[in-house]
Length: 523
Image 1 (tube, rainbow, N blue to C red):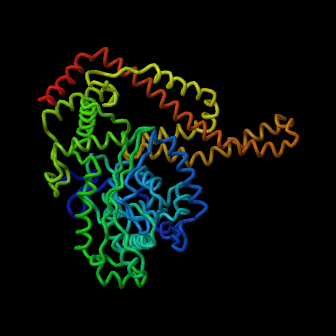
Image 2 (image 1 turned 60 degrees about the vertical axis):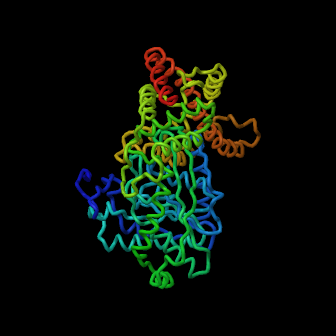
Image 3 (image 1 turned 135 degrees about the vertical axis):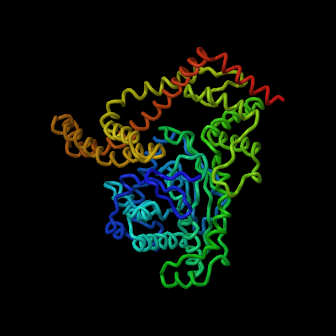
């Protein structure tokens, strides 16, 4: 049975539409129609200077936001042709961000309509030529008329298609909205329609046809600060010339948008769906993912294999899933996969639940998978060193990052956009608020130093004040990174305390649960 949303609005299939947030419910059609158009006669579709500056800032903040960000599979792609990247959507703006920061091409970007109308954020999205998209959720709730939505979306999809046809990358999310499920929800057709139009434009203008790229986005805990991220580029899906109808070719010659035939769109969607599913957990619940990761850790220790990083853990958990439910056994028509079941899985679930209750995971199991590991003296000393090294920079951090960190934390924990948007607010406040706060703080410190006579010994106090002002910015960056490293140190120490508490209170029960899992695996 379909469960409807809070206001009961459903689409033509009877599926519940996402409830609109305050931001997405505010419709400003005049502002949307005035969004700058991308440029295809240069390597960067938006403003080159602003885009390059934005990516410098994005990389700086991402280095503090994520403990690790790795990627694989770019060697599978032909970078001489455009790419429509498609991924599941569980982490709001972090999803397109991780793709854009790991893919070598400059992207033509499409996004929810309020991205180009929000204060501060719109300053950047407009300069990066982000193109607004009206979702069915806004259309069916009356935010737009059908004609307005079609005109706006037609222009946006045509711009995205033209950018892809010129060899740029783009990322759209077939589910159409961010969600909290451990599996993909029903696909919308925007990415497939766009890449077909891009192929038509590329053919007409004599360029290589683009391909559709399934992308796996893996976050250890998506709503945690300093989580691990891994981006997995799958085998690209080529768009064949035979998939492009004559009327679509004629329309793009007129620089117009024409809907691709349903058969071509559906065929491309049906090709993408299983490939993209495989690059996600594709499980009924997040509890199942937690159990698979615990099972992967225990099996690796039994076989004396290391799972040294997040990427290896993701692949090991996928192997466990595929062993329990081979890919050919997956019901292709079912949105929610059947729950996993086996004696080993249920035993691993008990282990994972015990760890989860105490804020731990499979990494906290010892080398023989017989109990909990202990924090080594070297690890504890390294953690303490990170914290101690941060302390001299604490006043700088509070001056330069205190306001935006507090605002990001408060807003991220109170937003009506769900847990998937939590780290987006952390990131956005760290990025955009810093651009306002840092010049003010740096200017105040430089002015105080100048008028206080602290720069007189330099002989040229005016020049020294300017130099001091500029020098403060890398110091602010260093203070932010130092805080992140200190946080990592605290996590190491906190993990030791949590393991000690679990060992003291429920250690015997945990050992028994591990022994039960070993018994099943031995059998």
